[in-house]
Picture 1 (cartoon, rainbow, N blue to C red):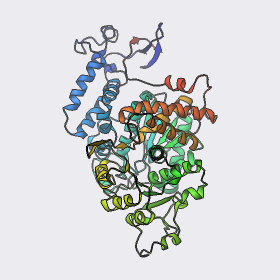
Picture 2: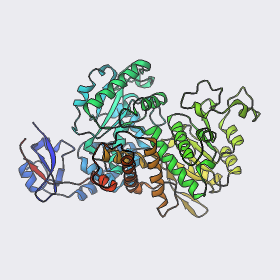
Picture 3: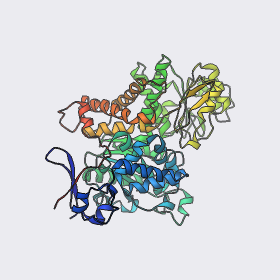
Length: 569
């Protein structure tokens, strides 16, 4: 039997014990150190002659890997290189990106990961994670047993129906859980050897994929209704049996199933939907920072939400809860929102509205006062003109929806409009922040969903905050894992948002959110706050014998090499 484990030597230092030798050791990315194997390790593990004679440290390996990365001019090729490096040497991969995170995070995550998803079936080489197809629903326990990592603290799962702003991508959506877990490690310091990406292949309604001879998924229209719900039920039951106490993160499910799955299972296991709840944490945090800078409250704002899917409604729900915390009742808080979907403003006449949108429907009496043509849908421009919002949030994936007329109309009535074009990838953004700065004469408070360059305006250099979920889910996950939390409550989500705001306000710059370089420090502060919240709510599954900070710090993982010791198992 080939195996390995992390232990401590006589001096209390970490070491890796394994019986794996020779070529096998060099082909396991979790174990391979490449040219960093010492002379003693090369002798002990039958590596003599299998590596160049020069023995290098991790820093030198990073220099070489970075030079190779820079040799690729195309972002997609850089993404491919980094994923190949992860398949070769896990420690080197994470250290390289950690040292160059501002440059490389957009390459492995948003926005480039969207292109990786679309080209998944054309570039597929090495499998990673688990693929659970609808037809294998009675073998899910067997599939979970086939996982590489025996200890799993965190699962990121997707069915690929609602990927970013690009929709149904079928099995190619596996690139999303893989990328999310990279960020959990880079920002949250979560041990990558204790994580597992999963794709639930329930078919696809993307005709282009179904007709592509290279498509790797199940060639079948997407399963829905009772059949889908039974499949999910079996998946959850298998996870609870085979990997109890795991933190289950739902990612990029379609609008209906995203809400449905979260509602059905959030009280049965520790689970979280990043598109709904993670987006809400970061958006609320950025808004809290904005209103604090304006010396106002959330309950004083009028919100227009353009895009009423899982992200838009998730943000709305999160803001609404914060307004209730500020003293409003739910009915009063809901009156501060105007939600718009592809068919226009959601009103009591919007018969297509789902149960999650219905609490925010505006009455026909309100709309009648606007004196619009009742035969036409009520557009964003109509709502902005009539409502005079103080905050405009986009989760629509409609490129350029926040045009000059709309922004200038909003700015006429609001001294410092809060404008968040949050759709990603970049080409799906509702507006370019540089345009918003010009149209409002730099009066707007802006956060975008994708990374944008610094804006130069009237001799000022304006940093555009990226309202990205990587400021939320890594710290939340670290706190959950540190306590083995039984559940994630709304109180814990609010705690995470406030912790992020507090961290942002402690920084010297005037942005609404931290920078990428500050994401790791922010995640630690969020994790400590989340850990304490879980303890206070009596939701921890472990016996608490240390402070929240100690619980968090003892499980944080860093990419570095440790000595190897050959043993027999």
